[in-house]
Every structure is written in C-alpha cells, then in structure tokens.
Image 1 (cartoon, rainbow, N blue to C red):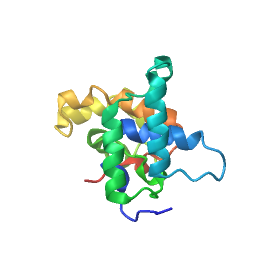
Image 2 (cartoon, rainbow, N blue to C red):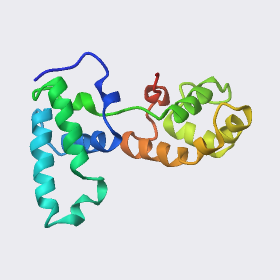
Image 3 (cartoon, helix red, strand yellow):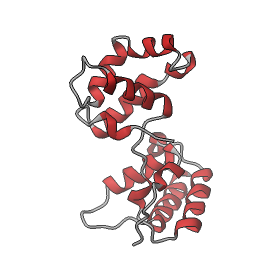
Amino acid sequence: MTRNPIDVATRVSPNLSALIESRINRSEAGQIVTLETMREFLNGLLSEALTETEQLHHFDLNESLVDELNALIEEYGETAAAVDFIQKAASEPLSRVIEAAISDRSLNNPPTLEMVREAMISGLTARLVGEGALEEDEDDNLITEIDDLINRYGGDAIAEEFIRYE
C-alpha cells in the first residue's frame, strides 16, 4: 500500500471523499482499502444500482465518480491508501468563520465544531458578512456544512483542524 506525503484529499470531490469514508468505515478491522479496492467497490455499486436504486440515495453515484477515481489511480497508483483521499476540511467560507471564532476571545479556546455552530447562530456569520469577510451568498449553506462536519466527526471535534488553507 502506498501512502502519499502531500494532501491529496484536496484533489477529491466531496462525493467521492464521502463514499471512500463510508467504505472504510464499513471495512473489517485490519482490512486495507486502496484506490483499486474503491474502484471494485464503486463498479459493484454501479452494477447494483440498476436493480437497487434505493441504496444509493446517500451519494450522488454516477459515472463521473468512476472517471474521477480512475484519474486518481492513474496519478497515484492502484495501491494508494484510500484513507488519504478523505477530505477533512471546511470550505473556504467556513474556514474564515472558524478562524473568526478562534480569534473571538469570548469562546473557550480551542473552539469545537459545536461552539462554532453556536457562534454562527448567535450572529457570527452575519457580522462577517457585515464586515465584508463573507459575501452574502456565501453564508447560505454554512450551517448545513458545519452540521455535516458535526455529524461526521462529532460536535467536540476541534474546529481548527478543519480549516482549509489554500
């Protein structure tokens, strides 16, 4: 199995990242999931999709994911560890919100995802829009995004770990 020293997860779509994470979470202890394992899994899902479409409502499962996975295999090899391709990052707008929450002296440091969510509901995002740090349309989906992160990693996860630096 090949491990990648660079942050290759930034090269993966959110849908493929979620599918990889789901597959790894359901694998048996000690089972190594590689990009080739993921290709076999995805091809199996696509063939099952013709008869069992209800299973696939969790993911936008389509041929573009196969194309994306094939491109990753071409670049990183079949034996690359699939775990390296799981995104654990907030979008750029949510990263700015998290950074603002970290700078906020009224929050206990380091703030958790749940603390950032509470700050957002209490006016943090509105303040950032007013200050010009966020565009008005950028704050539309931020609660949904942080809720997704909380569902995946827990409300007690340290928010700073999810900041995406670009």
